[in-house]
Amino acid sequence: MALRSSNRGRNLWAVGLLEVEPTDRVLEIGFGPGIAIRELSRRTTQGLVCGIDYSEVMVRQATKRNTDAVHAGRVDLRCGSVEHLPAFEEPFDKVLVVNNMGMWGEPVERLKEIHSLMRPGGRIAIVSQPRCPGATTETTVAAGHEIVACLTAAGFTCIRSDTLALKPPVVCVIGEAIPHFKTILSTIP
Ligand SMILES: C[S@@+](CC[C@H](N)C(=O)[O-])C[C@H]1O[C@@H](n2cnc3c(N)ncnc32)[C@H](O)[C@@H]1O
Image 1 (spheres, rainbow, N blue to C red):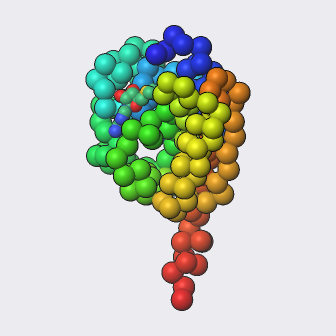
Image 2: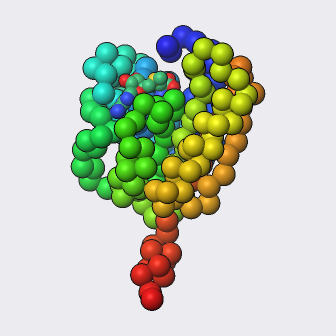
């Protein structure tokens, strides 16, 4: 998986769209071989990168790929599922999900739980490059619409999409966790 150039291109592009700051705390769900984790840790020199993946094989591969940062305590990779997210000490500024949301049961519920782990105004990027046989631009467009609908239903705001011209194209949908003042306003009758 890690050796495919489309994987690398897709992951590096997605990390760029997250606009990660050096002090950010970032969570990646379904990190696979850890390509994006490595790029995220390169950018969060004073922050922290956490990752959850339910495959022990992937956790081993990603840990190997990021050995120095793991030993330095700047990368924390855990075997676990998005359906049972662990508790984290502090909220995340950024969340990344690449080619993984399509595998979740009840994605809107999962996104609501992720939202609760994020700092108000924090950013999420959900990326999809459909890998099913015969996938076309239309498949990518449909995947993008589905992600937008799920993020909206889960309460994210400022939702927008970007596309990377691979074959088939990659869509990245960005959303923001609702800022505190909007939460407060929405409770005023
Ligand atoms: C298609 S791979 C993508 C890997 C990586 N994001 C990339 O683009 O290179 C999907 C990854 O998500 C993980 N995964 C699938 N379902 C998951 C779940 N419910 N919770 C956590 N991880 C999951 C798999 O183990 C796998 O590593």
